Image 1 (spheres, one colour):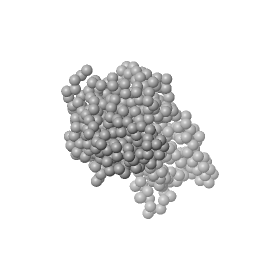
Image 2 (spheres, helix red, strand yellow):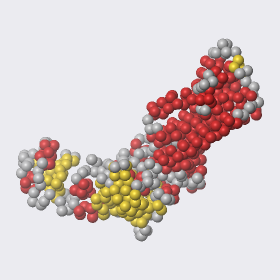
Image 3 (cartoon, helix red, strand yellow):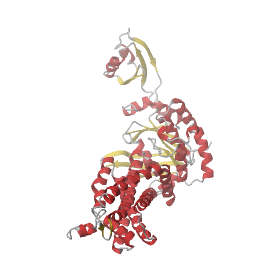
Image 4 (tube, helix red, strand yellow):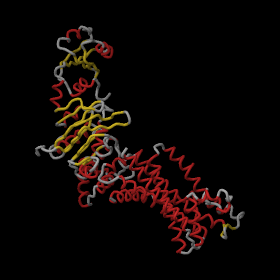
Amino acid sequence: MIVPVENEIELKNVTKAYGSLMAVKDVSFTVPRGMVFGLLGPNGAGKTTLVNMLTTLLKPTSGSAFVGGHDVVRAAARVRSLIGVVLQENNLDRYLTARENLIFHAKMHGMPPSTYHPRIDDLLSLMGLTERQKDFPNKFSVGMQRRLVVARALVHDPRILFLDEPTTGLDPQAKRMIWDYFLSLKGKRTIFLTTHNMEEADFLCDQITIIDHGSPVASGTASQLKEMAESSWFYEIEVDGRSDEYLRAFQRLPFIESASLEDGMIRVCLKKEGSLGSLVEQIDLRDLRRINSRKPSLEDVFLKLTGRRLRQ
Amino acid sequence: MMRGAICIWQRDMLVLRRNLFAEATTVLAFPLTFFLTFGLGLKGYIQEVEGVSYAIFVVPGLISMTAVLAAFDDSAWGMWFHRIVQKTIEEYRVNPITVFDIIIGKIISGFTSGFLKGLVVGLALLFLTGFQFKLLFLLSYLLYIFLGCIIFSCLGSLCGTLIDKPENLGRIEAVVVMPIIFLAGLFFPLSAYPDSILPYIKSIPTTALFDGSRIALLSGKMDVFYLLQLSISAVISFFLAVRMFEKKMHG
């Protein structure tokens, strides 16, 4: 394994404004070589704007950003030769077959046929698309299109990968297969991942930065971030019916930090220790099925830091 | 710098080749209808225009019209589709090519498509009329078509870059492109215009294209003023298309 010593990605006071709207505000951080870096945030937090600046699609309003040691504004073409990009949308060419999409990408990178044909064969096989390589992408399911987009980003074996919600629309099996592939690149390639999938961030990322309203609110490893929430008290409560009614009642209680309903369980976070008794008093014991204490998740950390759920 | 432009042009030609039959059939329908209705339908009423039969008079214009409209349509809708619908322009832009590669690739594709479609229609119409032309006259005529396709491909790319709503692209075609083509003496000689209007009509680059190309094909004469006008228009539209695309891409 390569020991990360250099910063492959570096942002210094980067800001992006659209008129009076600040999409990204004074962001600075570094991503060492070989690391899987996760940027977490809800929709509209500024994740995609950051990715677009780092992949040279957008110019920062102020500040500077470097990818692979090159300035994203002054040496944009050099940056683009080092990176592979999976953007949020499945922007495939529907007039080219799956294989032709990959060949076109290889040609854009100046790869000769003797290099790109075997590479494309491997990637099509890895993504389970060999049998469909002569088909046009508009005949593919969303998940297959996504796999083809990921394959396309890997054709030229990039040093740095930017993945903007890479597994959106994939079934669990395909998601796992792609995660395993990204894991196999750990230490060899630098991966910059944006997601609002907690499981994905927890599974893949060495370092996570949580961003909200265009600014980072916390940074660290998944376990460091979870420690930030350990001063809170998390419980899962299952009641017989009337879950919505109880949820609304809990949300009005002054000692509740947050409460939500997930898979039939009411998830609550208490502001201070010793409030559980007061909470239980609110429940008709005939309705109560069980109460579990639980460890904080990244979702809890996010909620605690921003007051919002990731998918809000 | 040109690697990306060549890749994009090759991609567009692959797609064009794949749909060759459908494209050729479609492109023939419009000018052939005009030829049948105006060229043959009015032939009995209009004996000769500027020394040639009316059917022969309209043929050079119909070929030019097909070529430049195809160049405009392919560039405008191609750029719009890649930018707004497929979002493949974003994919192009994260590769190690420049925005100039993209716009130049698209302009060359529009030009090639227009030129080829013009040739298809030209062959069909020349076959139908049995018109005999001299090779040198044809080469002069092709020079006009060449410049016309560049101008309309650049203008199409410009519209495809700046216009987001498809209905507005259609409006530009109906309100700007078609009028400047029809006003340029496509179906009648410029001498039909009153003297007070003629200078304005002559200042439109499409007049230089349609009148100049007709004169070139029928008599072999090259109008230097027309060629200069077309060359300047080609240079201006090229720089406009490239500059606006670059501006749009970099926000």
